[in-house]
Image (cartoon, rainbow, N blue to C red):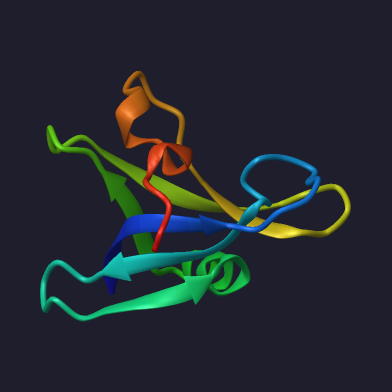
Length: 96
């Protein structure tokens, strides 16, 4: 299954990096229109287990998410760096 991340929800506080500040994210499967919300850890495990998640900007640029773990063992996801800033996970709007 492949899902597009549509928005992110951050929690308050100090974090090891800005991606760890993401508490949850909303997503949609563009193939069947199924949607949902996953925690940062759930999305990490989904991607690590072979699922595909991505961010797509208004121009159609797509950046895949990769699963990462901090030195302290905190799981998170981030977009693969490319030359397009608008397809960055941290550029998404805050979920309401």
